Length: 471
Image (cartoon, rainbow, N blue to C red; front, side, top):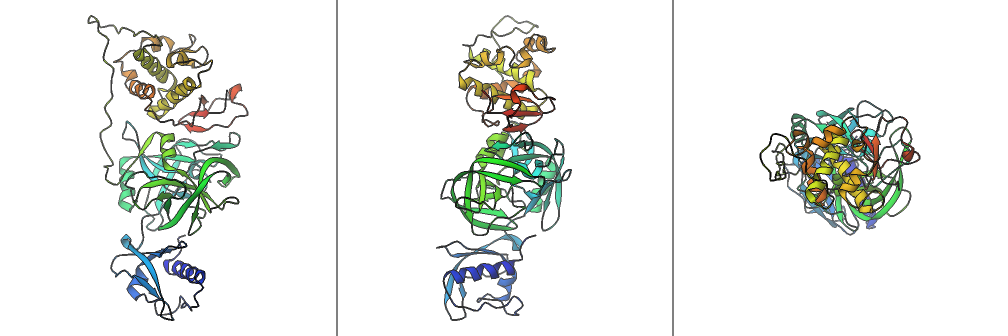
C-alpha cells in the first residue's frame, strides 16, 4: 500500500531537518494547521516528498495550488524546495503486476513494448514477478492493475528469463513479457500509465528516478555488481550478473520489482529487480532497459508513438534471373554466396522454429550467429553452422520435413517471415535476445539432452530453453 503523502512528508522533512542539525518542532499530523508554512490547499495537494544530500527538497503537488519556493521553520529560517506539479495529486499511475495462476510475488509494470516487425504489444516487467513460481507456464493470466483506481487488464504470459528452477538461475537479465491485445494496452494508457519519451543511459553516477507507489524517488547509480537475489515465494534464487546498484532516497520495498527508472528527460533507463542488498554501496539493484529490450527483441512504446502502427514491410530478395518457370529453382548453397547463406539460415529458422513466431525464429538466428562467432568445429560461416551434421535436426535426412525444407525458395509463403530475419542476422542488425546462447532445446523435452544436464538456461523464449555456458 502506498504511504499517505502527509505521513511521508512528515518523516522525510524530519530526516532533512535532523541532517542539517536544525532544532525545530514539527507539528503533529493531528494538528489542524498545515506544517512549515504550507497552506491547506498545498498540504492537501502534496503528492510526494523526497530528498538527497546536497540537493533541494523535492516536492510534487497536484493541480489547483500555488507551488511553494521555501518551507518556513518555527524560528523563521527557510529551506529551499524544488516544487513541481504532478497530475491529479500523484505523479503517475502505479500499475501492479502479478501472475493470477500461481503464487509468485506481485510487482510493478515497467513499460509497454512492441515486438519488432509486428504489431504485437506486451507489458514488460521483471521475470520473477510473473514466473518465479514452479507452476508458471506459457499462457498464464497476468493481471495488470492500477493500485489507486483498481482498474486493470489481463495479459498472457509469453516469455521470461531466467528459468528459476532449472538449476541455479544465472543471467544478466531478469525480465518477463505478457501479451496484450490492443484494447487492453489502450486501457492501460487510459488508466494513466505514463509512456516514456524514449530510452536513456544508466551509467555510473547517473541521476535517475524510481517510479513506483505513485512517487518518483530520486536515486544515483553507484556501480555494477553481481549479486545473489532471493525471488518469489517458493525459495527461488538467481545470480544477477552485472546488475546496476543504486542508492535511492527512499529504499525500494517488496512489490517494486519491475518498477521503471526514468531520467529527468522522462526517458526509461533501467528496470528495478531487487532491494535490501547486503553488500556494496546502494539499497537497490536494476538492469539497463536496453539489455531487457535486446533480450525480448522489442522496442519501447514511446509517448509520441501510436499504439497501433503498420508492421515493417517484408524485404524479399530479388528472384534469380532465369527463364520463366512455374517450378521454383533452388538457389545454390555455396557458403561464399550471401544470398545462399540467407536462404540456408531462413530454411533453418523455418525448420527449427516455424511455430514459435518472430521472436522464436530470431532466437534461433542468434544461436547460429553466436556459433559462427566462436569459429570452432561448429563451422566458420552461416551455411556451415546450419548444416553441421546432427546439430540442427531439421537438416537431418531422417527429419520428416527435410524434403519440404529443401524445396523452399523465395517467394514461398513459408519463408515470408524467415527471410527478413535471416537478412538482418547476416547484416549484424539483429540484437541477441538469447544472452549469447549457442544451444537450445524444447522446454517439454523429457529427459533433457545429455549436454544440458547440470547447466542452467540463460533465457526462455517461447517453447525453447537457451544455454550460453556449453562448449
